[in-house]
Image: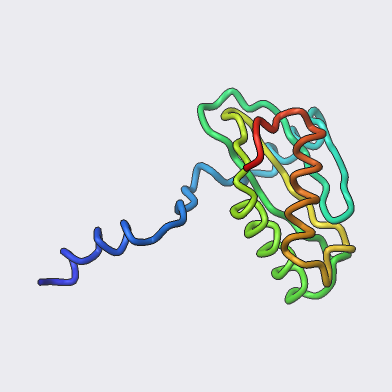
Length: 132
């Protein structure tokens, strides 16, 4: 069996949904629009900005400023937030842009703490449908 024939099987066994390019908020004008017109809710470890985007899918970005620390700490903060989102099982409605910003208190936090903080922030924005 050639390696090309094995690729689809590997994709089936990989349990996580791969992020598509269009699922990520990338352009400065989009960030500015979310900051200016969107709703923001802060919690102990994160700040969540959300705004309706009139698309059939959500776009999301995870940010950590230099206030969080050096690049190692910022990258860990982004990984923590992404993993907390994945583990939380939140069912967000389609058609929103989300910007999730790490606060400097996230340094040293556990994934479960960040998960609770994210769930609380999303619940207070009013867009959260259900938590597992």
